[in-house]
Image (cartoon, rainbow, N blue to C red; front, side, top):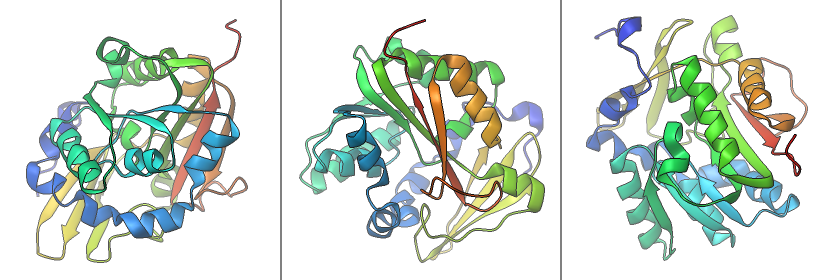
Length: 259
């Protein structure tokens, strides 16, 4: 095992870790059918309740949320910072008969890469934790704010890093990484980064290095960017104890009238 030095962990590390062999197995890790069952249209319901129609999936990965939301009738732009992920999203959309606009886009320069406004921006699948720099997290959150129409929503999720850092790792494997023949566990846990190992049934092993942002820190980033009424959901439920859920979703609203 090669342990990364803290100084070597940057926000672009995912570019080297998402190797083609890993991207091709990502859907095995997710298991689209079981993930859809676990989410029970949670995101579509929130978007509909706020009258959202045009959605930017800023971290589309292999396209699960972009495709499923498009199937639900939303106008979706699927974007990701990794070319292999964007390409796989196109394949998955085509195989499911979904017409989907796609783009390669960096969150830090989102308004340069995407010249549109949206009713909602989603950043799901623990993707925001690819950002290791406080400055880049602030910058990216500001970009999410700027691509939204007044009254728009930002929806961001993360692993429950409060639980992992305070109590150690455990997982129900019920909602996000639902593949039956895959094991996803942290190989290394520090306050500066967590290195996850993904072991597949055919013996393939891959790694992701992520920043363990706490729930309160993400809420503050959203509030500091200008989002109001930031609300948290633990494993898709509004009432939860800090350490209980595997994943936490946070939803913030861009004010209708700028202050």
